[in-house]
Length: 364
Image 1 (cartoon, rainbow, N blue to C red):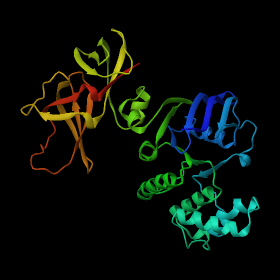
Image 2 (cartoon, rainbow, N blue to C red; image 1 turned 180 degrees about the vertical axis):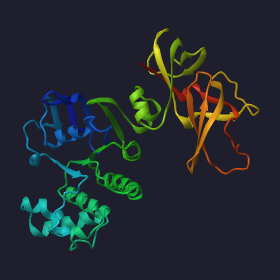
Image 3 (cartoon, rainbow, N blue to C red; image 1 turned 90 degrees about the vertical axis):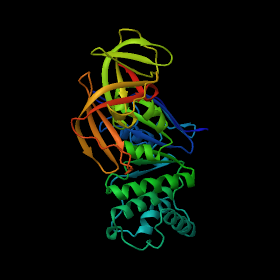
Image 4 (spheres, one colour; image 1 turned 60 degrees about the horizontal axis):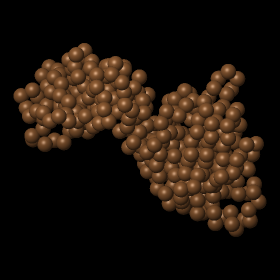
């Protein structure tokens, strides 16, 4: 695949504050790519650099193979959708969508065709003569999206566009955005702090922290094989157990924590004596009563535990289990409603087990 946007060794500083710190990202043509991270991580600044609203302090940005240093925002083949919608309240929906085309002096009959097509794409046909002040937040967001798409940009930039919507509408819009992107084949670059949103829509994700890119990859890879503790902690829920490496080979790394041996897989070979952290997702842990079935094969880690707390969350029940290291592990058990499912209680003595391949050992 050819590149839609290439960011090469880019740094952006505002005085003494470095907002983006020497990042390089290659975004493919037709890709839904998300910049994900907490507030202040540099993701919105990166988007503004692509848009042309800011200029890099160092490094280069290319769009569709062309360097864009010094090229103003209005001359770049991109459009931006903002969280605030940025619609004109005194104009009708159709006039809002047509605004950019009118500024470009596109013929009137062509404008009408393109506006009708854009509104149809976002399921807003028939709303052209309404005022945006008469619309819900979700409808306004659709109009903002239509206005951005009507210019046929090569790249669409979306800066937390669903942040002002309620949860149910936001989830519906996530699926619709992905469907629109796939239908059009346009490159979408999406900024969000919502991990679930990024995982739901993205072909690939760049996780950012403190102006740096921590990891780039498909959602499954980032979730299952995080590069470091920040990524593991930011994407989903994770249990962490600190320890010291006592053995490491190409298949697994063994840690010792308070005389308890733990194991998981690691992306890098570690040396005996290194400090490291084992990360294990709550849904990867199997919970069983001490009197129940116990898997004893060599690829499974088994620890004793005591249930300290129970939280019912509808689809799952979340158990807090204290293990011999003194750590508290969260375990998620899906509520399937089957007669054979065990109902655990506070104080129960249990086994917690995980497959070595389901745990990740991260270097400090």
